[in-house]
Amino acid sequence: MLAKPNAVASPDEARRFLEANPAVEFVEMIFTPLSGVPRGKRLRRHEVMPIYETGRFLPGSILVSDITGQDCTDTGLVWEDGDADRIAKPAPGTLVLAPWLGGHAAQVITSLYELDGTPSDLDPRHVLSRVMDRFAADGLVPVVACELEFYLTDPVRLADGGVQLALPLKGGERPRLHGVYGLRELEDFSAFLNSLWADADIQGIPLESAISEYAPGQFELTLKHRDDALRAADEAAMYKRLVKGVAARNGCEATFMAKPFGDRAGSGLHLHVSVNDAKGNNIFASDDPSGSPRLHHAVGGLKETLADSMAIFAPNANSYRRFKTNSYAPVACAWGINNRTVALRVPAGAAKTRHIEHRVAGADANLYLALAALLAGVHHGLTGKIDPGPPTVGDGYAAAAKAHEHLPANWFAGVDRFEQSRLMRDYLGGRFVDMFTCVKRTEQDRFNEVISPLDYDWYLKNA
Image (spheres, helix red, strand yellow):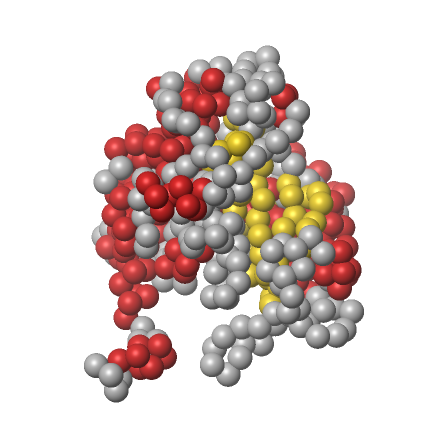
């Protein structure tokens, strides 16, 4: 039985886990703030039960830490707030072994609550839960899945600060050719993949097939669809951490950076979504390859909210380097049927499996917030019965150029659009939008303070 949104794990769950795993010596409690970077504490075995009985204090400033872990003081949640504590409580079903850390380690995902027990409106898990509540009120259940692309790189940076692809674990040269869907490319890293599948099974992560992606050294594995979006987000977050841990154990670095190489494909987070009614029937199902009228409405809502939510789907400066013509990353608010050149794709398949693939988010996006923004768009479309217009046929990049339809082109435009969005404030919360915007603007200021080598190459003598 899947846990209900906002549920807190019972002490019995921890008791059973500790009894079944006497070798566990410590547990890492994980909290995911706005930046999407997991943070938390490493606890000793005797400290685990108290988390389940009373919770564990974490400073409120962790909610609004930037991607590097620095405070964002303009949020008012640091000095003005006295950096007051909140309470972290464990999420059901997330206390699992962490095999890459050895047989004595485990982990648990937590959510943050105010001292009076109110869910924090800035916790990404609670933000997602609130959007899910909109569907529940209408007797609907979203069904989602996450696909994450990543590169395996050498853990040692180059002299100029750059990165290079990891050496094959079986020996030989670094990958150079595209090798899309190549089997040899998978075989070269079979030790990594086999460990990944084995550890995913131990953690209960529903990890399925692997492919060698379009660029050399790039991979994608699929996760099963879930009719609990919060659980799907938890599993994707666990998977992302698992990939990094298993890669390190195999002498590699796994990066989910959106665009680690300028001349190679970026890494995306493809989100798949359908919606069930109260009887478990897919309301998008149709013999028509384009889906049912309600699928069309969902697409219409996603089109209307896409530009407003780009700050969620592309949260960092590097994120926007993915969006290039003929790159398999979309550049316009277009939809299509069995078409990978558009933002919103209705894949081929049996009528009962009809769903939408949202192809905009980068692999660097906060998984909880990406799903929250996705579902906000779907719900907006269903309730407003929004017409998406005709699907794009053929080359979506050419159609976008002809129609002059483009998404926010950079980090600053994306954050500005997000801050001004009435719909994002409605679905994600006004205070959340203000705090997320504040964190991103703090990151922008800090990012721009750094003078890069390129600045000197272009301007030192030429300016």
